[in-house]
Every structure is written in structure tokens, then in C-alpha cells.
Length: 102
Image (cartoon, rainbow, N blue to C red; front, side):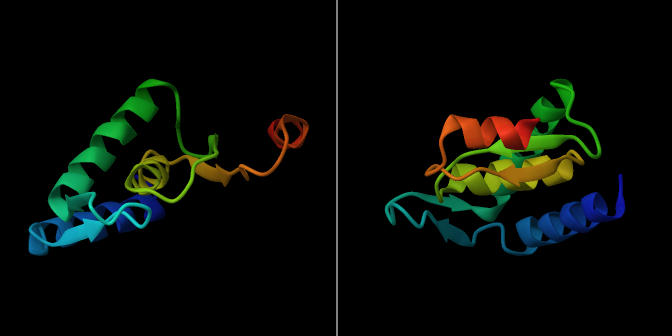
């Protein structure tokens, strides 16, 4: 693991362990909650899937998502797998996104 991967992994492990019963609220839907322990498991699972798909250190991963628990999981998963999170605006058109991808 790289330095950033180690930092994320250590921070999430300690947070998930010490605050495993702490609750995170979805900013878009306050009725949706997830515990840190489940968040960490979701991040680890998603990171493994990204790695299996070929995401490796330095790989750019373009993402267009709103604010949600799923977005948090995806961003941390990208970082944990060594990828580079590239946020795309939902307001941009596909030609802008194609230019970024090139």
C-alpha cells in the first residue's frame, strides 16, 4: 500500500473499531443511516471490486454522483485501491466529460 492507502486504511480501521456503533446520516435523506463498521466493510468490498476491475495506484476513476453514503463509499474505495478520484459535474455535458477522459 502507498502512504495515502495506509493512512485511509488505518484511520477507517480505528474509526470503525472505536466508533463502530456511531451512526452516519445520509445528507440527502436523514432517514438513511449507516454505522461506521458497515461503512468500512462496504469500502473494503468496493475497493476489492475496483481492484479486480483493474484499478491500481494512479488509475484515474471518473465519478459523477450526488452527495450520498454511496458516494462516500466510492471515493474512499477509489483511494483505498490506489486510484485517483476524478469528480465530474452532473451539470456538465458529455463533451466536457470526454475532454477530461482524453
